[in-house]
Image (cartoon, rainbow, N blue to C red; front, side, top):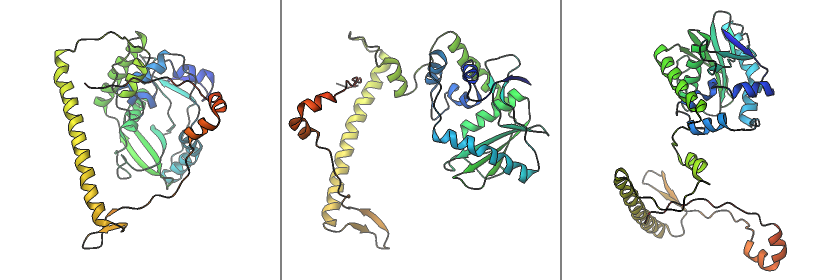
Length: 305
């Protein structure tokens, strides 16, 4: 294996991480991440972004990793060696992976913590969330190992073990996708936006006041937007009217039951709270109010006429 040694959290580590695509970034590079789009990842790789501060999930995962590693060793009898740094692709240096460990019998090791079990299958299976499946296959490709054990503690419970075998076809798709993404980074050619956050990042300040004529292909799309908004308003009006009838029937009663005693609906008073009266404060203390005013950049609003 081709290894680049770098200690986690050092400036060298961050600099190297910016020079390519790591295992935890594969899903984003391929447009398959729930948390980050290809454009957002591209922006991180092509601009001067400060190293991200540790959040609680990262701190928790890193703190529990030694315990998960020891539990895995206790259960399987396999010790785990840790590589401090990155395993690189033999040909493409911008493809690298930081394994959580490798056992002496040539099994890649990943140790995870998850708040909930969505996406995880039965223990012992290879059913793991898509982001992790892509990460593991990427790691198997770069380490040239055949199988990976993924140990996860879900909801702080006793760790469960998942076993993932190499998938050469999927690895080829991953390699091609990461290659295509990194060519966009090298050529400073941004990926297409895929959600509202991308549009905000790209066009929040890039505004042209001149009008633009619609393309033929977008006429039906815009009509669909208009129709959807009309139907949504009609549905909201229908729902409000239906809710009114039910609440009028309930009257002073807070809970509505079916014939078997199951709760169908509730209409309860929210707990009393206090609210800061900004308008009154402004009237009583206009000078103090003005001292705390800060400029807020306006956002672009999309209105269909």
